[in-house]
Image (cartoon, rainbow, N blue to C red; front, side):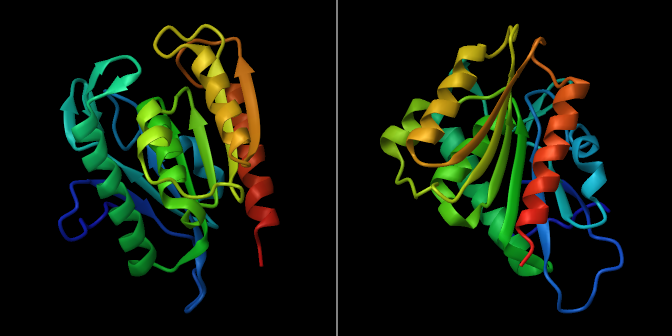
Length: 223
C-alpha cells in the first residue's frame, strides 16, 4: 500500500498493515529508514516475517541521492550536515507521532529499523523520543557526537536495541558500531551487539539475527 502523505510531511512511504485486523485493537509498528542512495523498497524484506502482526512503514528519504534518495547530507563520514539532520529528525518524530494517531498502533510497541544513515537516525530518535520508542535495530551506523552532547535527550533504560556492523565496513568503521553499543549501555539500554565478516551490508546471518531479535521482543512485549 502506498502511503498517503501526512500533513506537511516530506516523506513518501509504503505502508502495510496487519492482516485480519480487529476493530479497536492496536498493533505494533516498525518504521524502516534506508541508507544513502537507496529507497523505500530496500528494507521491507528484512521484516517480511512480521507483516501479519505489525504495521510496517518504509520511508523514503526526502533528498535525491542517485541512484536513490537520502535522509540527510554529510560534510564527511561521521559529520552530518547539522541543520539538515536536525530538520529531518524533527520531521521523523512528527511522522511517527501522526502515524500512531492515524492508524491502529500500540504506542508501547513502536520499533525503528535503519541501515547506515537510517541507523544513525534510528539511534538518534531513540535518544530524543525516549519511551515513545520501545526498540531499535541499527545496522552499520553510528551516533553523531552532537546528539548526546547537545540534544535534550530522554532516558533509554527501557530500550531494547540490536546493533550490528561488518568487520570490514569500508564506509562506516566497525569501531563506531562498538562505540554505539558502549554508549547505549552507559545510558542503561539493553543491547544486543553482533559483528559479521562483511563490509557495508547485511548478511543472511545478520538477517536471521534481526528476525530472532524482533520475534523475541514482539513476543515478550505482548500485554
